[in-house]
Image (cartoon, rainbow, N blue to C red; front, side):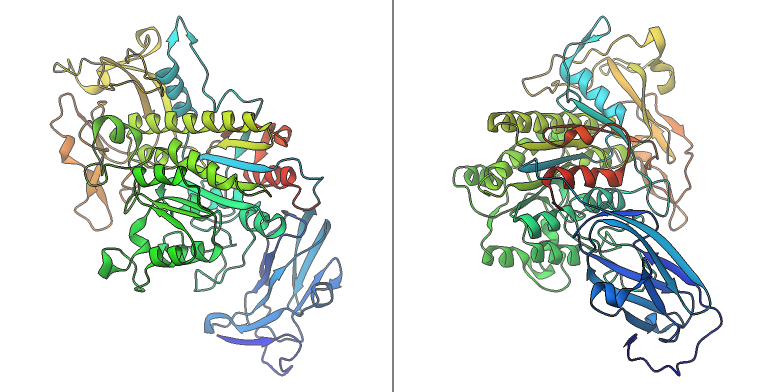
Amino acid sequence: MTRHFVTTIAAAMLLSSAAAAQTIYPIDRAEMVAGAKFDLKVEFDGEVAAGNASLTINGTDAAALFGKAPELIAREDGKPQSALLLRDVTLPAGHYQVQASDGSSQQSVRWTVYDTAPRRAKNVILFIGDGLSPAHRIAARLLSKGIREGKSLGKLAIDDMPQMALVATAGSDSIITDSANAASAYATGHKTAVNAMGVYADRSASPFDDPKVETIAELAKRRLGLGIGIVTNTEIEDATPAAMLTHTRRRAAYDQIVAQLFAAQPEVLMGGGAAHFLPKDAGGKRKDGIDYFAKFRDAGYRIATTATELDAVSKDTPPKLLGLFAPGNMDGVLDRRFLKGGGVTKNPDQPDLTQQVAVALDVLSNHDAGFFLMVESGLIDKYAHALDMERAVYDTIMLDNAVRQTRDWAKARGDDTLILVLADHNHPNALVGTINDDMSAPPSGTARERIGVYDKAGFPNYPSPDADGYPARIDVSRRLAILSASLPDHYETLRPKLDGPNEPTTPGDTPGTFKANDKYKDVPGAVLRIGNLPAMMNASVHSGEDVILTATGPGSERVRGSMDNTEVFRVMAEALGLAH
């Protein structure tokens, strides 16, 4: 790639025909907190001579405003396309019109940069139920609290909060978001594209040089010295946890994401994904041969790989903690506590999310300046993709337990902590009734004939929950019927999968396609469901409905009505007074 500076490039460079400014990043109507770092990029359709390329902000030349000249990339990726680039710039509060020109045509966008009032919250805790739909919440309430004569016998902690809003989730490139750009919107206050986090997804070949925007965790640490914690039960490199601190438009770049997490040095980092911390010759998956367990240990981190080791940490609170409890995703609560399926046989000593959160709070509470903590119950989404509704609901109950204990922790401290609970995106799930089927006897008729709707639904007959809200059995005779609106070809059994997480599809006869998994073909009552998704999809997909946000604590009054997902960042920034 040939690079020159605008101020020195030879004016004799050949100029192709009209090369209109294609895109300006940040994009139109972007909102950002004053003082947050961002990269400014202009992409032109063709080659542009330095004397013709211009960039102004509110009529002022960008070089004069920022104290440094934009860099002109004459032929980006060796192609006849030019770009202007400014890294790590900031702006004070105000309204800005940004205009770029190639000398013959121009493009403009508008930005809003806002101040904040004085700091109100010492700590901010963001709970994300990945893919958490209203159906999951209702089912969790029914199972963990019970219902009699139409009235619930209790409320979930995630619902019993003073503030509530509906949050729109669309990304910059689609009405349907994924976990990467959804979590990135919360973390940065900027929209981005599917698979991208902490960046605007540009046209360059590299997924690591896209225009960056500073995350809430980076900004809080840089400006206020806050401790940073990331807790999940998925791989720690997965999109939602990674979006809090890393920058790439390729969410699958796990090796590089681990390297970025190490560079960021959060005080607490806990989840699965240990395989990408170790080289292949040490039993891991890293291609570069680096042992990140050793690097974190050398950087002063206490390391825990089991629930037992994590319990020991809670008795001797270290300044920094790395907890990695499975090579890939951790196991959900239904397998871990009851069925012993999934990966439990290989990793039986995995902590519950509640234990992870309790230890994270112990470590982060030692930071006098306060802290930012993101907690994800991430397997809700993965189970929803696999049409495994029982496992998704049990992990929703686990999320609620983690929120309840955290609210108790905050109340004991004097309520100096803003707590937010929401999903990153929705799944098209609906609770339509009950499934009337005695699991101890062959069903009468096909699966669909066992669904009870309206008055035939009645109430489920799960056993009374234990102290943590979990019924001991899911294979009861009147179960919740939670159905998805997005389906691959699969055999519908309407029966819980007791031997391990559901696998609705297997690779099809045509490369890149999937077909119904014959494993379930002979389950009594099974029905072949022809899907409504392209054959290239092996699972259910996300949907575009708004998600529910509930909140409590200082600054939570901003949560109300209808909001955009980028506004969640602003709620946190205002509570922390990041631009005061």
